[in-house]
Image (tube, rainbow, N blue to C red; front, side):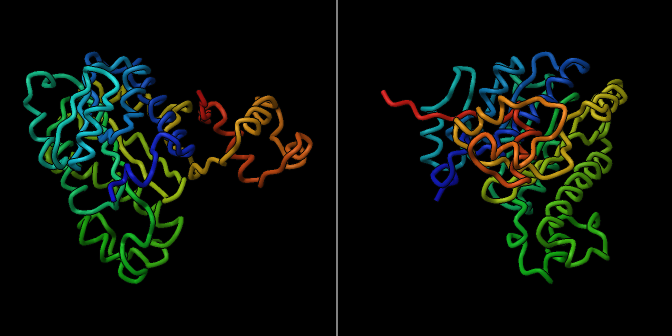
Length: 314
């Protein structure tokens, strides 16, 4: 079953928050880097949520969505949100090389977000190398992949599986414990960022790679998003100053786990925010319902990005 048949990607609150955080970060970069004529390249599926955000929040016009599934390609063509979105049929490994020298996209910065619905495997590694080797200067590159530990084999075999995929960046003393549960997500995020930096170094990319994005979120499966900036040499220090600033939003210290709330519950909580003291469980109970402490903490932290969903009955 194709992932678009299993999950409505536009309705996952944690994913939605993560997506908004990423675009907040890119907007900060836009103010400092030369991102004129930015091109967006992604895996839009049939929903195109990130494409709509790229157009409306970043002012991006030219966008490319890659879709391998035959039915998915037909539906993606039908669901294109803007006429400047081009849907390319095929695997990312086959489509990406056709874009690097395309007249419409060459010598313009890109935002590439390869949002996979599977594990960090050999094909993902190959795409990472392809983009870092070939994307234009001042491009922004993100990758999302499944962080569920079972995707990487049985617990004792996971360090070796990661070593097979990622090579020498995986330390010889990586333990089984570091490849389980929450620790596995941290391990994957750290290794993927190291891989990106190593590829930029190995290929002697001018300007290198500036790590900037590291976010773990969970709606159903835990997902890991990492990425950074591929600046031109003259913009390296500018990129570093933006992503190292205190207001940089794209490295949340904890996984994003947004509570599933009704519209009424979300509105009631929002009416109490912002406040000088953290909301407590008794505060929520006084509103007429109840939540776990971690759910309250998550909403309070991300209420500005919390999505509002409603069914419209005509």
